[in-house]
Length: 262
Image (tube, rainbow, N blue to C red; front, side, top):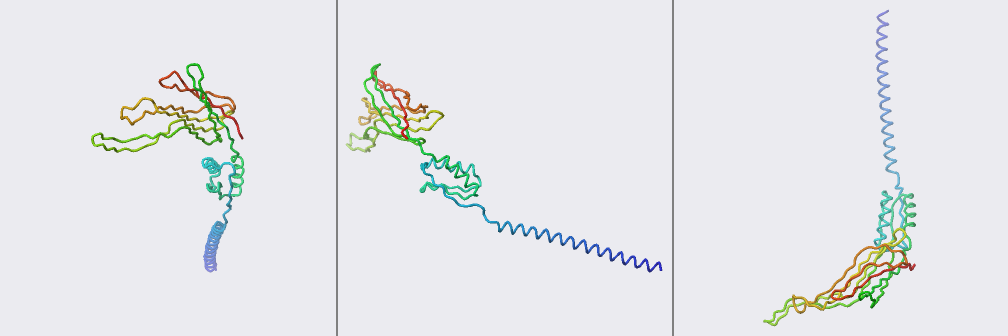
């Protein structure tokens, strides 16, 4: 009786162990299947998720100069690194491919930056002095938009013969080049705190009375250059500098004033 009971107990134990192993195997397979299903669902969700970015074109109405537009597009790229931003120069437009939130920020930035440029009338006065006596005065005015550069030139183009001449053979090998002689003024300005920052280059050239020792056809060109930056108060004249005229007691003083036009 005890032997039969023992055999039945061992058979039950084996069956119980097999049942437990089968249960564990089923649980493992179910868990792996659930993980695989979840991963597949995530992959499918990621593949099917549409691009949330939208396309937008923003036109610049005031900043149409290339440098100004590039500054705006650079500011947008720095503030919105996830957005694709391009400037179309022929249309004065910014094209964007970005999220709706970035598009909204870009529109606010362009509204703040695309302002009407102020235009100033910049007047240079050249005063001709002989000792302490004023013997002449010239005024040169130009319109300069904030952030832009304006150039004014007054003078003549003088031909200068270059090359060599052989007196024995009576043959010449020469070319003619032209030299600008007169006055040239370059001006650019920007707003600076409560005033204006003016960048000026003034160049005066003229033919000297003396001749070059290189050859009888080679002239001597006299040149004076003033190149620098000054801070102006709108409507208030400022003395930029002065030139001494070589070989005389004369000198020329240069004064500038800037006035808002629009």
